[in-house]
Length: 283
Image (cartoon, rainbow, N blue to C red):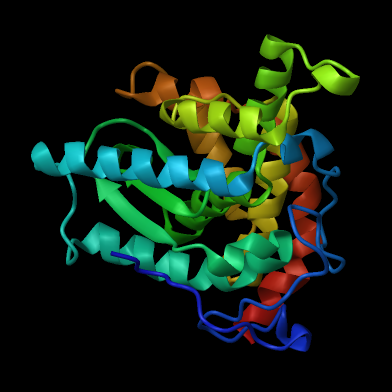
């Protein structure tokens, strides 16, 4: 069931409106370019990602997400619609989603879903196409506030919006298969088929430090525009840094989302850049 289906786009002047609901306004051009009015500074997305069709990767994500939910349901680990924590996640997502389209024009057509899985794992993700899942462990063991939860959700959404999985897969396949010049250059169909075959790797795909920094900053801005306190990004990663092997499931998440002084310092430097967005959202 699609919980956050798209609606007709609002006029471009309403792109950064603070109104609730889905103001999925048109962004200039397609893909994962940074919006003109962005307050944080992120690098340009790699053009290599275009070698993997976004539609193919999103279809693979739908299949894998469905399989994950089916497994959780079979184990009675999938939270029902009225679960308090799931209701909380839905409320946070509804505030974040209206601000996603300027970061990726494709997001206007994504069928956003948010689910909660009962597990002690400290984990959360957003697959290509807006398929989000949180594990109860990350909410309970870290005792996250709504602001901190929004920072995680914004971070994971940013990975999808900036098409980091698409870029990682494209780079991997370009390396493994050896792209050749001229008549031997692999076609889009070849890489598209390979992308489809890699659907099972989407949950275990590791992003680069650059990807993580990118997602931190884009997620920070998304959350601030939605009215979540940007200072929570710092407290969140401080909590993450304290989540060691003593917290069951903690190491798995931190292996792909390492915390540390550099990460926290970068967030501290960027919080002032989005503070005015947060204050405007509260008015």
